[in-house]
Image 1 (cartoon, rainbow, N blue to C red):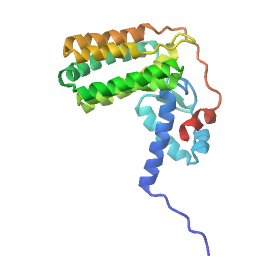
Image 2 (cartoon, rainbow, N blue to C red):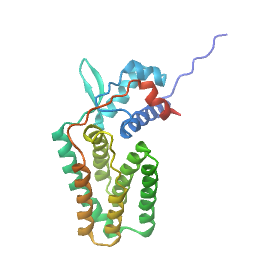
Image 3 (spheres, rainbow, N blue to C red):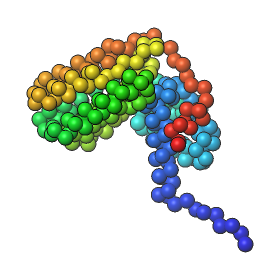
Image 4 (cartoon, helix red, strand yellow):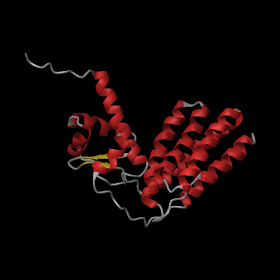
Length: 237
């Protein structure tokens, strides 16, 4: 009697690909996969125990999110935003997030303020403990939660991509050996939102993003991780 070969259903394939996407995406967002790092199809297929075809689909999705570049005849690489792209990302964020906080300031409820404060408290703990990846992740979540509270799906999707690119920009242009925690800026922003003055909240958001941008420089040398397997194994647990 021959052993039956289990045929994986399309829904299961999609679920697995979502998990692979999330694993690689999080590793990029927490700056464990640096800009310029090569994402080899063979290595990824071996790590996740799937076919190269499925890895290619995941990498294509990551390229749509602008965190991976697909280069003909060379393969997939973690995106490396140029200086001009970095300036454009921050400019776009200032415009979009000013509109977001304007809306949120007019509608925010006490329980929503409490959710934002919880993220800031966790971010502060991560910074105090030197847990840079967690601090970076929480900082992004703070801004995306504000977008969610604004109730505009399109703005949130736009901001998701911009936050992703910002993480790569910080990796490239951050002062060597220094990570600027953002919980103080977030705390001031919440105070402005809670005051109920949309214009004040817009100014606080704009100032916060300017400070983050101004903390970067162009002389950041990259320390690219050596083994893809070592980076991704902690995310797969």
